[in-house]
Length: 129
Length: 202
Image (cartoon, rainbow over all chains, first blue to last red):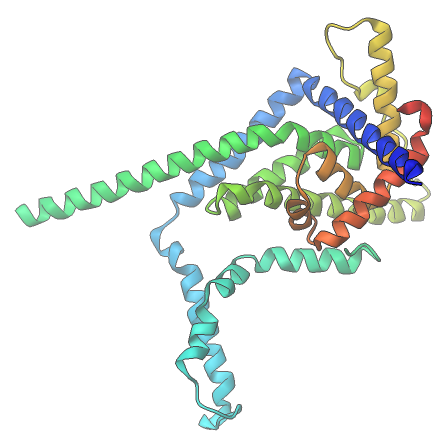
């Protein structure tokens, strides 16, 4: 009963193994000129890392400044114009805690990436997950 | 005077510590990129069918990783790097579509098959007889064509899982989708490849 299923699985495994072996072979056989260009590209990337780490110290405060601005904006939205509360209830410490929690920081860091992803998914029809 | 000397010493110590950290991070990143760059290039080349463009895409991905994610734990680098690369490849395909539309308007559309000779770009393996070399080359050519003909997401899942060896979770991060979607795309990819390559290829 299970034989056709097993055979199918075996065929799949064979395809994967052969594909992997062929791909590995093609990777090992890349020519010197291509490897040299890859090497150059890698060093450009590492130079970028050095540039980022030697950037002015005040630049390191940019993310913190962004979060402070976001928190201020949140307060302004909640307060509404003319000091009237737009959202009922006081601004509590937990609200700030929520804004400043690690996930929010990660999200801000990856904002550009998420924007790129979203834009890509929207433009490529039916290509989402 | 002594206080100034103390402040200077602390400042130097901090600089030294930061410099050491940067050097360490640079060494780690260099090692990571050296490990993945060749596979990444071949994957990009299969996806875009042009080695120069593939080299540009890989370099761009390396720079973006260094610029934005070098401070992340090194265990996260692989899925992030391939996520950036896959996004770059998708952007490349979009740009090609637009370019082709413009070319159609001017009556000079590219078919996508011209200027790319897989045999000419095929590797030149050492230490094998010409017959073995030819067989390997032909099998790789068939595989590349079959992988290129897969829908984008299936191709991504197949290459990340099989060629790069990422697990389901890392592939999901790299593709920006759920684990379940990865499994579905991968399974469909294998099924399509089996149909396309036939029994004789195995």
